[in-house]
Image (cartoon, rainbow, N blue to C red; front, side, top):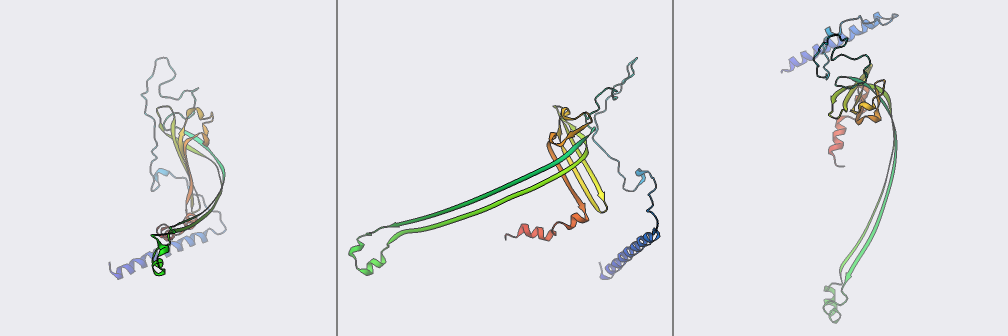
Length: 249
């Protein structure tokens, strides 16, 4: 790609961005003194980017009609328990996490060792002259060691999360337990908050209003985070993260 073509593309992109910003400013100036208009009611299936939702569904049951009967197979009974019991059903998980953890460890190790091995009369050294005694060893092995280690550590953490999220039954286990998963997204301005709850529940633990508490969910997985402008600014740049992993000091 030549330099001239690159400059033309950059100029075109700059012009488009300037025009878009100008149109947005003109629209804001036109709304001075007026209330923000509401969006018209439209068919969401005709919006660009629309995709139909595909959820796990139970195996369809054949519908049969019995003579002189008001009910048919596969329909919900009037007096039947309406709590979640099969794939595709929905139940509400009450998330109330209020954990406080405090740990404090202290370790202190001190060790001193001295070793001295000496032969007082090595091959008749007392009978030899001074020059010979200077060449003969006095102490065979002399070693001193002193080690000391002090370590202190403490953890003081408080976590709190109170919310409700609707989960869908995605799998029915052979023993009757159900695998559930629920996801909730909340967008406020340019920040997206995401809550994910998954785990295994027993039908007996589901209350009459089709809700279940998080402590009764086995293998519970709860993830609460976000993405957006604030989430991209708060963590350190990826260069610093890579340097912290690679550099040994």
